[in-house]
Image (cartoon, rainbow, N blue to C red; front, top):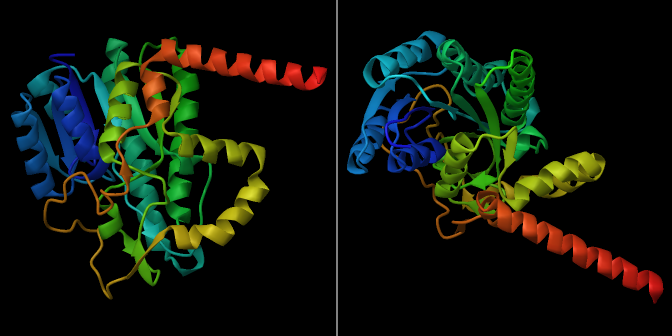
Length: 331
C-alpha cells in the first residue's frame, strides 16, 4: 500500500486517531481534519514517527467548503485520493424530550451531513478517475437504536440510508468507485469524557467494549478489501439480528437495561464542558477511560481477515448442527 493516500475526518481522537495510526503504519500518506488543533498536531507527529506524512486542516465537517479545500489540498500535495474515511461524530446522552432542537440539528449536521459532505468531496475526484474507496464509519446503532441517544442513532441510520442509495447509483453507472460501511460495536474512545450528558452519572459505552485499535484495524481492512457492509464484533451482529428478528422484545429489553448500561458509578460533574458545539482544548489521544475493560481483538474480525478459515469454520458448524438434528430425529 506504499504511496497511497487516505483522508480521515474526525482524526484528532478516538477511532479517527487510531485509524490515522493504522493507515500511516500501512504506508498511506494522510490528510486529516478535525476541530482540535492539538489533536491534529499529535496525529501528524505520530504519522511521521511511523514513517509517513500528514496534511492537517483544522475545520468542521459541517462546512462543505472546508472538506472541498481539504480534498483539493490533499491532491495538490500527495496526488489522487485512494481512500476517504468519514468518521467525525458528536453525540448527546439525554432523554429525547429533554433535548433542544439545536442539539438535534448539531448532531445531524456533524454525523450525517458531515458524511454527505465528505462523500461528495471524494466523489468529485474519484468518479472522474473511476477508482477509489469511501468508508463510512457506522455503528450497530444504525440498525438498532438505544434509549438516551436518539440523535446519534438517527444520524447513523441516515448515513446507512444515504449510503445504500448512493451504492445503487454507483452500480447503475457501473462505477469502479467502492463504497462500504463499517458497523462497529461499543468502542473505548474519549467521547465518554467530552460528550454532552444530562444524566446524573458519567457516561460509558454499552459493554462489551472494544479498543479503538480494533475498530481502526477493521476500517483499514474495509478500505483495502471493500465489501457492501462490514459488521464488526459479535455484539454488533447480535444487535442487528435482534432488531430484525424481535424488535419489540429489543425495545422492552433496552427500556429496562439501556439507562443503567450507559452510566458509570461516578456522578457527573456539574457544568462539565462538552464538545458538542466547540472543541475542548487538549489532546485526548485514541483511548478513553475504559482501557482495563476493553477487548483488543474481535473473533469475528479475525475470521473476516482469514476468509478460508472462516468458511471452513462455517462448514464445520453446519455439519455438526446437521448431525445433531439427524441424531435427534433417529433417537
